[in-house]
Image (tube, rainbow, N blue to C red; front, side, top):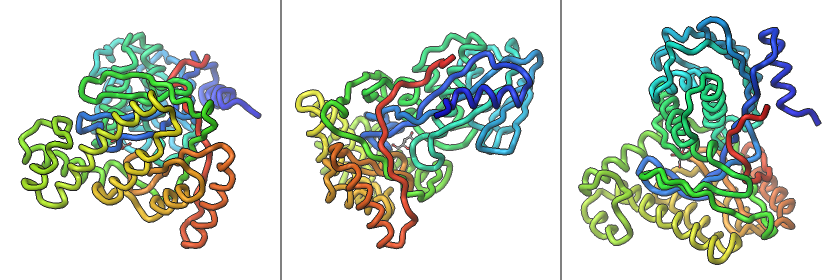
Length: 386
Ligand code: GAF
């Protein structure tokens, strides 16, 4: 099997006629639990997966940023002297947005050289597995090294989020970049999105004879517009009407007051956030006390809350979750921002093949596009590979 890093080094050479200064990579993520809680200053518990974006990068002797990739014909070229978020668009807004955002976090962009970058990735795009955070994080660690900016991984997560918010225009939280940068093998990243305190917690799935199966429905989602933005606005409205700065300030004792104060739809949005925060805490505690086989019910409850209260699921995701639950999964839920993308199922190893066959059959029966199912392993976060 060829190593994607060799391919990227070769492609960089074909693109520039020289060897790169180095190779860096960053993973996509699966969110185990804690959905839409990040921008409400709540709790999330994602893990980095064994699908990565790999980049080769080399400094130039002028002020140009040139970016090519295996997934687009477009060669993006931009001058460091007029790098503003408004000037960026298309897929290159992710890497170029990171270069700009590093300047917002202290890099002296007037003093750094231009760079050539070649990008390749095996994180599926549009699957809700954070292919965009993988690009941002790989570029962030590489430029941080080559430009000698000296930022830590937690700050690089903020850089990636700023690129996504201001250059791409998606009002997303800090979860995906944190997972991609802070992830560790066999572990999840339990993040308090208010304090940004991150704890790496061992998941122990393989030891317990479990696998996480991703079911990519191929239903496309888009965070820069539509439902994601509306859900965020509903949460802000709920917080405002309940007199708190963010929904993080509420817990289950506040639900009766929330129900009396808010319209029904806003109440259900708020209830999802309050109960989901609690489920993240319960998942971490259950994992520590009883091990991974005991967290399935929390995953199931999270899916119900996203389906019924937050209303971010789609029929394909609901079907994937139901079929997984009735074919051996200990728990299953949609993962990521919703409105499409992927579901995950926590499955005993011996049931993985059966589950894949059952999912394929059920999707065909419903006339849905054939999904892609594959196992993911909790993996190391962004790093320099060579
Ligand atoms: C997307 C966003 F990018 C994250 O910040 C998070 O809000 C997630 O949706 C929902 O939990 O992945």
